Image (cartoon, rainbow, N blue to C red; front, side):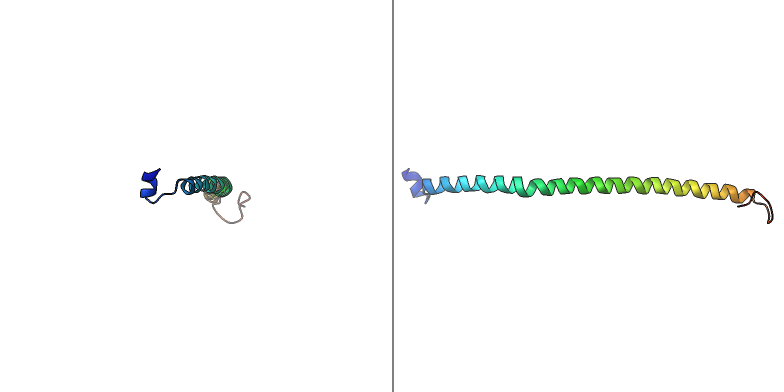
Length: 84
């Protein structure tokens, strides 16, 4: 005990500080880090869904452009019945 006092440490005060640190760490982990992590995961899923939707839309647009080119090639001149 004399060596701790020689270093300027008061053992009861030090133990109280350690307990306080554990309490603060637990509160921060449970009520701050946990919800923020959940929000970040939800945001990641939303972004992934948006990217997937964009990929599907790009494929649909490319297919529509191909169909339009195909249909445009069939229209040889004005007045034909198969032209849109």
